[in-house]
Image (cartoon, rainbow, N blue to C red; front, top):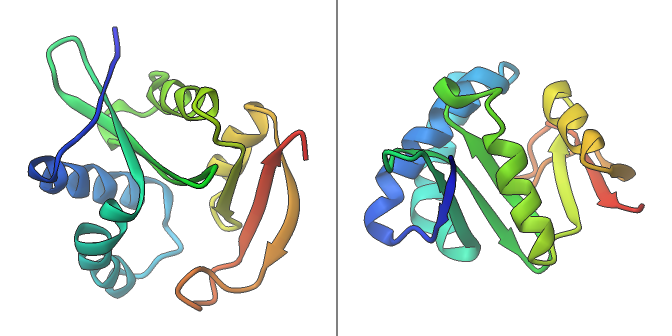
Length: 145
């Protein structure tokens, strides 16, 4: 059974380990130098810019997390070892219940696109560059879009 908790800054190192394992499992289009450049930004800036929720197993192990800001799911990552077990759906469903209705997804991540489509998100726009101005196109998706 999964439970939701609100992580503290003390949990950020565990969150970044989950992030990295998830990115390595799903973002094969990102070169190593991009992953290494993103880690400190996420750790030192992005975590504090969103409302974070994490999913924990019945033993208390952190399996994934979601960050929401102004109705946008800014980050949703599940540990590579917990993929396919409903953790992402659990986190996304909770975020939606709390008012999230938008998400930006890397176009080169078809698994994530399918995941959000399955939850009812539809593409409403596309950007050629990601949030850092890098050439990783984003699909802007919205519920009932």
